[in-house]
Length: 53
Image 1 (tube, rainbow, N blue to C red):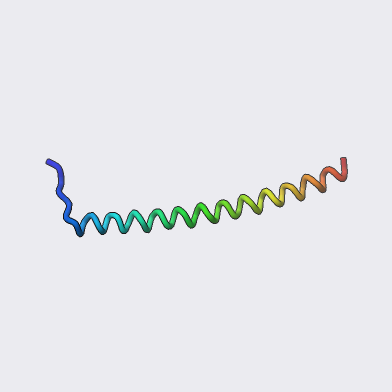
Image 2: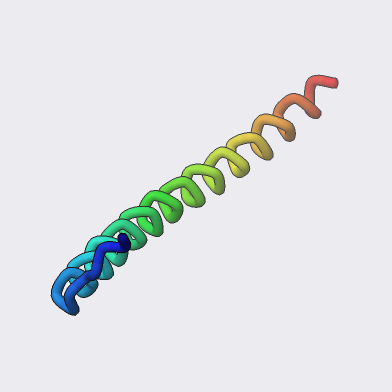
């Protein structure tokens, strides 16, 4: 038999899902920023290496 949820139960579940989604979005934004920094550093290193070739 399926469990029945009250409106309050569903609102709480949705609230928790929204919090989780916001946390994931923040983590993704940090990863994107780190990736951009790594890409810039790699470009600088490639230029320095090219000078020695």
